[in-house]
Image (cartoon, rainbow, N blue to C red; front, side, top):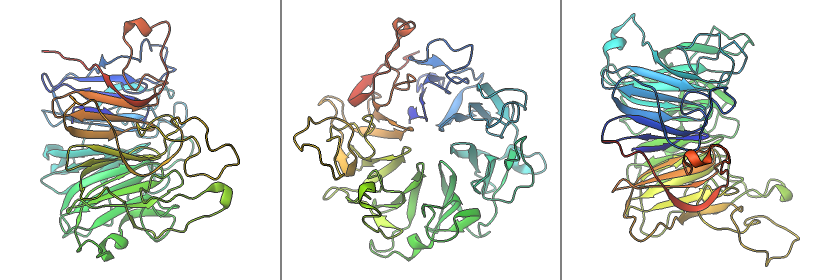
Length: 425
């Protein structure tokens, strides 16, 4: 997938030269307050000296794997000035939270891990995870205050925050389980196994990992998924999470959700109205109400919105839409009880409660890739065109060029607009 949404930035991996580009804060290596920051509103090269094979844009930091099987990390996210929280483990503890340029992350040298192929990478707000193919190991590093590293931690940073700056194996996965894919949320790490089972570690205050303790410090099976037989027992294929909700795609293309749903990000047509107290009580695991005769090929989760790519090559969104991150026009008070006039002008702002089609230009073709940032969305078509919508206050949509140096264009885009990505030979 060439175009990827991070928290307040977007990355673009050129299919022509395997070079990486970024627009917005944190993607080039520094945050918006860094003294070196010039124009964040256009795609600029990321300084990695090797051809890149795959990349992940997390909320504040990024991961990349090169053709030499080297792992790089860069971006922002330290909690304490000079303390370092392990998000950027190669930087040491001498930098303030202004970000850092790409640095190579060493794999454990005490085993064969250093020569094991990195097959997948992912990350949450302040932690990272990688999957080693041959050894079937899931390694995590970064901050672990809510258990998101999936293992017991003994070290802390300067503030006392539990961290581990070095990639190490998670705990709790049965030795006979073969990991097929991994995923992450703000404070969660997920593992999907060949058996169809789903395991999760991290924050669980909103039951985004299923029933059980508020925080899971070891990888723990989500039994609600295993026990559900409403779709003939289809195993889990993919999982992604947002700030406090989780999306689960099964092999048969059905999609389920767990966790928060106040903004419609659960996709079941319901929401909890804060003005009315608790409102609707959901089951821990609920099925996303997909359009008739449509199944999903992939899912993506923003902070409080969700994206589904249908097997028909079209993208559907639901959840928070206050800055247009769903790419559809909704009433500002959609889904909420209000005493104001019902005929108020329609505008982006109200939540989208179930998957709604994102309308692209007729000549755009089918969508091949979806990605969700904190409050923006990136779609890539089969022909390589990239469409964006949502928040743009840090240039994450890549809508500006050098002409925006002095007068930036932070306006959010509430419907899809095509962004111009690098086209190097």
